[in-house]
Every structure is written in C-alpha cells, then in structure tokens.
Image 1 (cartoon, helix red, strand yellow):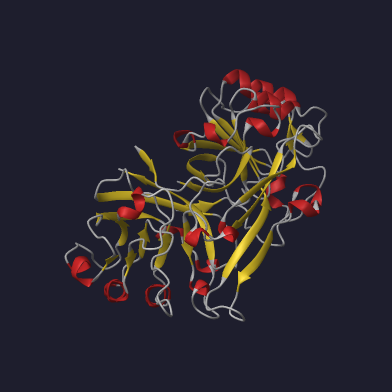
Image 2: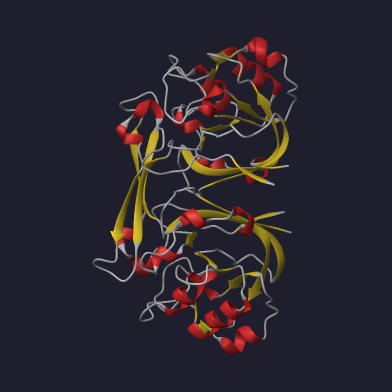
Length: 204
Length: 204
C-alpha cells in the first residue's frame, strides 16, 4: 500500500501566511492555439507545498541541497499522532514518545486536517527541538508549512538545521495512523539551494 | 545501493534545443542582505531535466498528470543498453530485446554520455514505438530530452501517450549496467499539467 503524503500543487494550494509570492504560477508556454504541442512553465517558491529545508534557509552561509544524502530519505520512519495538541509540540509531549537516536520522526498534528493556512498552526517549540537534537535523530517531518511559526530568530529551525537534522515541511498526514512505515522522500534535484520541493510517500 | 538517474537542475543543465526559455531560473526572493532568512524561487519549463510526459503534451484535450498512478512508477524496470545505436532505436533492434507485456523499459543510449544538448540525439522511432504499444508495456524511459526529435506530427509521442504508456525523458544512465532494477520515480505533484519534473532512482 502506497500512501502519498505530499500536497497537490496547483493554484489553490495553501501557502505560508497566504503570501502571494508563495503561490505557484503555472502558465502555458505553448498551447494548441499557436502550436502543435502543449508546454507549461512553473514559477514557485521552493518552500511552497511539501519540501525539505537545508541549513542555508536559516543559517547565513549555511549548507545547501548539495549535502543531500538519499540514504537518509529512504528510511523507516515513526509517525506520531499528536493531533491533541492545540498550539505546539513541547518537551512534555515529546519526552513521552518512543524516539531514539537515528530515528526519523513525522508528527501528525491538526495541521493535516486544514486545507487553508492559519497563522496559529501547530509548531515544534525550541525545547522540543533541542531534545530531538540531543537525541541525534536523523530527521523530522511535520504537516505545517513551517516547523515553527515566526518565532524571533527561528530557534527551532536553527537547533535542527545547525545540526544537520533533516526537516520536511508541508506533509499531509490526515489519513495516516500512528506507527512505523517505510518512507520514500524524493526531492527535486536542484543543486545549491536552501530548499527543495519533494514528493513523499509512505509504505507499510 | 541507490542509483540516482535524475539530472541535476541548475543554470548549467542541458535543455532541449538549447532554448533559453527552457533554462531554469533560480532567484533569491529573500537573502541575508535584506532578511534573516534565505528563500529561492524557481522558474522552470516542466520539460526541463528528468520529467514525465502526459498525453496533453502532444494530444489536444489529452489527459494530464491527474491520471498519475504511483503503483506504475514504483516498479521493476528493465534497463537495455543500446548505446551502440548512433541515430535511433528502430524495430530491428527492439525486436531482439526481451520485452514483454506490462514491462517498464529504460533505454540507455549514447545520450547518457553527453553533458550538452545535441540536435541529433538518439531517439525512439515510430515503428519501435508501435511495437511497444502493441506489446502493451507499462512505460518507457530514455536518456534524451525527447523520446523523439522533431519528427513531423510527433508520431512516437502519440503512439505511446495515446495508449497511456508512461514516458520518462531526460534520464541519466551512464553508470547503469543493463539489467533488472527496482525503480522509484516520484514526480512533483502538480495537478492538471502535461508534464511533471521527477526524481528517479534505481535500486538493485
């Protein structure tokens, strides 16, 4: 069974802060009124939809997509259902979860049930991020378009990205039950960038 | 072992006919001179780099990416080394290959060894495409940026797309030996379009 946990990309996709410049533009470069082929061009912020963040996104002179290691993106993952959280995932919650070194964890929150962007989406707070960093997990995915909101100085991003922990944002986990899965996360292969759109699936 | 058979996407990528409008543009929307985050925006023709074609690309009112079925993109594939061909893959060659109904086949040609676009890249001719169509294969991948050149009326595309045979273009097979592999092809999830950029890997 294949579970597609990626956001569909089209003009109706929810985007961070509903910012116009994050909405994808898909335009016909050729169509059948003036050509015998049809071709589209996409213009899209790399943080639109399901995507990976790399350190440069939040760290000056940080590393880029060139550090990508597919072995870490084709991996067992633990999906935790924390959809009871109304504001954020904090230390108290995360300490109770079965998370170990080298795990890749995905958090299913109430964000997965929203089709439109809300400014108080559930995020991962700094203390919880530090806890994950100390455990030396491999990566973390969440169903918000940000792993934190607009916290001053972006401490959650920096705790994770500063320690080469992979961040996947914009997952869709509504139909996924808590448990262990095989994840295949294949980002576009744009080199030298601070983020890459990705298609992400889970398998039993 | 994971073999990445996708083209790196950056300003130096080879594009069809070296057309300026097919070169990707990756621009910083935010950088550290004016923000505390870094974000890029990509502008790219959907046929740049490794990608899937859908019928609408060559068939008026044809089907779009909405027909995608991931079960057909995560599949065993047969890689055939036909790098001895200097011009095209024709019926005589293809009849000698072990291709059966429901196979997904990838053709490794001399295209895989080229880093720049040449107009006489190796293509799949109409007779060979018809042969594959009659066999009712699942899909075909090639290492050229087109599965045919600019043949009048695009008969190869139409023979395949008109019969819902998946086409992957722009593969990189230089390092792949002939044989059977597990393929994972995950396209972006842009809905309603005639093509989607994809990340494609093979595993033993």
